[in-house]
Image 1 (cartoon, rainbow, N blue to C red):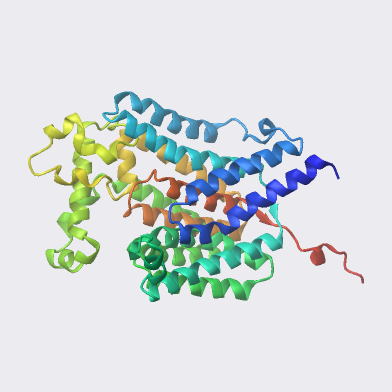
Image 2 (image 1 turned 45 degrees about the horizontal axis):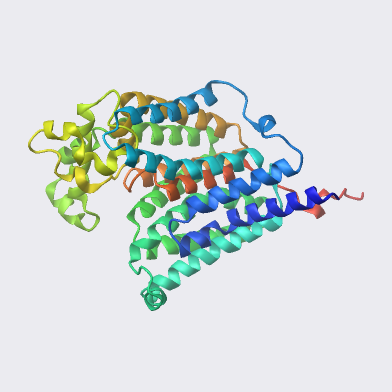
Length: 404
């Protein structure tokens, strides 16, 4: 075995180890997904090249899917020309771009099949992350306070959302590796973690994704319809969601939902929709939500609109696409979603179900939480995509021929 091959395998192992350890690392440092996926992607690329392979040969074939993705990225870059906060736009683009590139590198360069020992390590890391979060919350974050770290319960919202999306493809890999019972145990542990945590977004994602997972296992066609409806409906309704809920929700119900700031969220959705109406075709520019209140057109908003533009984000990633990239950006995002669904449809039945569930969970979460371009969120999405794209390598025992 050559020296380059040894180095390649070591680098690949480190890359896989980072991917497996991601849940624990996020539980410790809740924004670490961006750095983890970026570093793992670079290591995987170096290992790939060290094996004597060329990245050019691993690139996807030219076609509508590739062009749609490049068009969306290109439109986001072009939108910097009319951004009223170009430095903020560039910072947000870098924050989202690095983990996105890292995830793409993992998709292109990691082996198509993963060994059972890696699946086991990832399952153990997943369980450890759940246990760490549960213990920390039950103890009132005492260890973090003792270390002088941030000790608010919401710091676990991000890792819990990651755990929710990763669980479905991880559970399929576990079943294929022969650990069906442990996959159920891991699912129960995830439910307990989400119940104890304070993330309403994760709870919403669980309530929607678990039934979608079961339906998709029963009928992949129906599962794909559910995923398409969730993505398409969320994007289509985003600009009018605030007005619809304001008109349909009884005031008493809004008051009862004060713990999740329902009234403020509805007003934020209305304010960002009003900002969209000022630039419906092009939007305000990529990454400008953080400073939307400073946009020149903010002065032209109706008197009853714009108060909560200073919130820094629209609490809806789909609405953020509309507000920042306009109708053109929304159309390009819809095209990207269509091709992602087409790529998912080429997977086997079980992984289709996992992909559908993760997609529904992600859509539910991003419809109510913070900015769509946060680095940790992009890293979490790319990690989930990588998990859904791989197969479980057969164990050595299963590869041995049976003796009649």
